[in-house]
Structures are given as structure tokens and as C-alpha cells.
Image 1 (tube, helix red, strand yellow):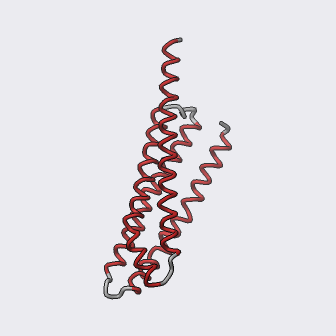
Image 2 (cartoon, one colour):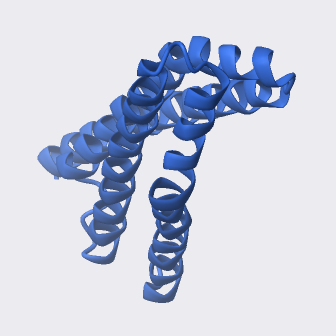
Image 3 (cartoon, one colour):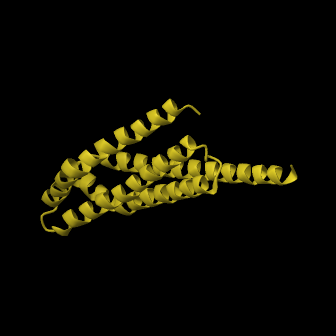
Length: 160
């Protein structure tokens, strides 16, 4: 694969990470404040919303880092290696964790949507959960295919 292609994909990973970082810095505290304003009797909702949204950022950025490493392995002609399989495995776990954290936080978003009469919040949450599950299953399929390709390659190397 050409180096330009992986360089483009690495730049795309950075361009994906920067807006999410901006959301974490600027939007997440406002969302938590909004939740606290909707339910002033339950001020702890602010902390729960903050914890849930910031907790989802951790597996997101770890998956981006693993994707970056995977692209580096491709640059080094190490795409068919156990390190690549491990990176895909970690991406799969991060995607499952990301979706699971949003699923755990859905009752909080339901409370916000119910009080503010904004069902779009729930739809956005469901889209994020299903997108994470699709990424997790896609990474699992790629992991399995890559592992089988490595096994076939090592078998062929032994027969020669």
C-alpha cells in the first residue's frame, strides 16, 4: 500500500479526534449543566452525565490510537502480524466498551429528553450505540480474517 494512503488515513484519524476533544472541553460541561438545571433536586445528575460522557472518550481515543498503530504496521509492511491482530482486538473491545457506556448512560439521556421534550437525544444515543456495535463486529471479522491469513501464511512458509 502506498505511504500516501496511510498518511491520509492517519490525518483522518487526527481530524476525527480533534472535534471530539473540542466537544469534551466545551460541550460536555454545558450538557451536564443543562441536566442539572432540568432536575435541580437531583444535582448529582451533573456528575453522572460528566462521568458517562468523559468515560466514553477514553475508549474512543484508545481505539483511535490503536488504529494509528495499525496504520503504522501497514507502513512497516507488518500488516500480517500478531501485532495487527492485537490492535484489531483492542479496537473491538474499545468499541464494545464505548457502546456499553452509552447504553448505561441512556437512562440519563432519557430523563433529559423527557423533561426538555427532545426525543432526538435518545435517537442520537441509539445511533452512537449501534455505530459502536457495528465497528466492534467489523473489527471482530477483520481480526478473524487476519488471524486466518497469518495462519495460512505461516503454513505456506513451513512447506517451502
